[in-house]
Image 1 (cartoon, helix red, strand yellow):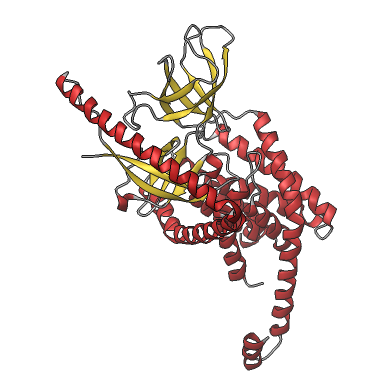
Image 2 (spheres, helix red, strand yellow):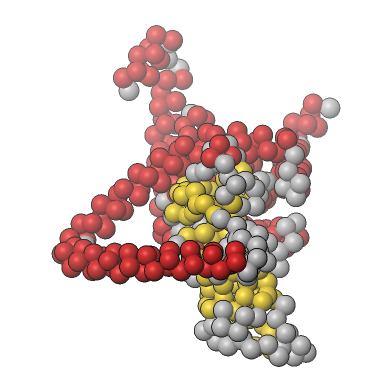
Length: 272
Length: 181
């Protein structure tokens, strides 16, 4: 008997580990206490190392970038000053408009829109060799992050929280194959579902062949979404073609964000 | 080389893979250091270590990269087992042979990933996606693999010689050598 085990030890080990891996993978569909504990345990050990490595490497890159841009720092500084002045004026104007809009909505008896607050977070880990577009960020349930919360950047929609640990969480980015968001063509107000394809492009589904959609139209979040505020940029349409039967449109979107260089994000939370 | 050294190196590799390597991503893909480590240790140290490394590092890689747990483990187990089956027939020290091994295994690794994604995770990747990724990663691995393998071989040989040196010594002399050699 022991000879048998010794002879086939590698095959037995291989089969055993395959079964465990497969079990773990299947359990992701409905995470249980066991798989959550394993994830939590590994994250607690690895996340601080990742944070340290990200920050150290970030400092090094920042230093290199500063050294290389020393020559034009003065002109860049002047440009930024000008931009700050313009943005300050714009901000004042928008605040006034928002206030006025709120008053009008109140007078017309409209339901007040949700108020959002933003939790800033830093990307501490991602696997560039992976087929799935996910990142690990340094905020977790201890910071009030909830499962399914929207994640954005100042440029637009980034994704949503797919798994929450104590001090970190996993974000499923927009290009992830299982990711989707309610979108709308900004110009013609045509709604649709924006889905990830696993590649650099997004696809917009459920748009009828007769709808008014054109190349370079901007796609923003639709106001039926409870995860994102309406009007956030999602991307720009880069290809429109009718499907084989001509009933629907095949729409390809170039995302607003460069997901390869994503390093800081904002997690959306509804203000109580 | 002491097992603890290998495992420490492996954890460092996971951290580098998920924090530093993303900066050097090009054409939608990047090298996979964990894959290269598993291939190297399965070639040099046999199936058993390769299997354990594939399983454990795959699991850590999944969690550290935010992916579904078990996916990388499953795929790396397949790679480690295949390497283990062929290891006695491969010319491990020859650089052109290493290039061919690494590229062929990259295509196999990416095929397993493609298969798992479509069959288990209900994704709908096309064969073209597999070929595209495998080709880019193959090039990365062909450029990086032989250098990494050479460095790891030197490290292993140095440590093996040291282990060999202290194997026949008395307890006190072994302690002395451990401290000063």
